[in-house]
Image 1 (cartoon, one colour):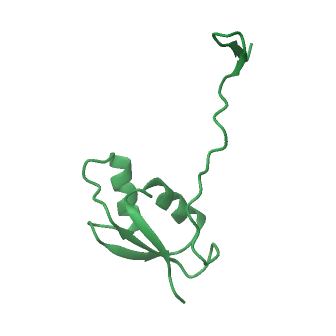
Image 2 (spheres, rainbow, N blue to C red; image 1 turned 60 degrees about the horizontal axis):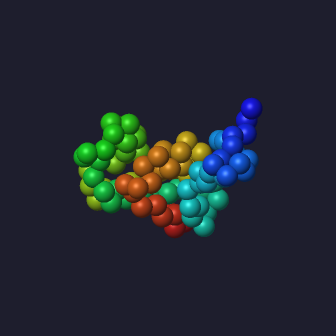
Amino acid sequence: MGEMKTAKGQKGQRGKQGEKKRTVRKPKTAAGGPGLKIKQVRSGIGHAETYRRTLRALGLKHHQDEVVVPDNPSTRGMVFKVRHLVRVAPVEA
């Protein structure tokens, strides 16, 4: 039932997309370290409302704004969501 036949009669696979990589490039510091410096490099205008709200939650108010946030799983999740709008660097201790 889970298999489907292709045009030449070979068995195909349904729903197998391979591994999805949901990781943010980790800076040299470990999670829970001093923090992350996040810079907004693209505007939220024209993007989904959820992206704009995520930028606000990170403390980014406008284009080219920079903030330092703690390095924890919830922050990394927000950064992952708007990774195409921001640049991330570790905070030097």
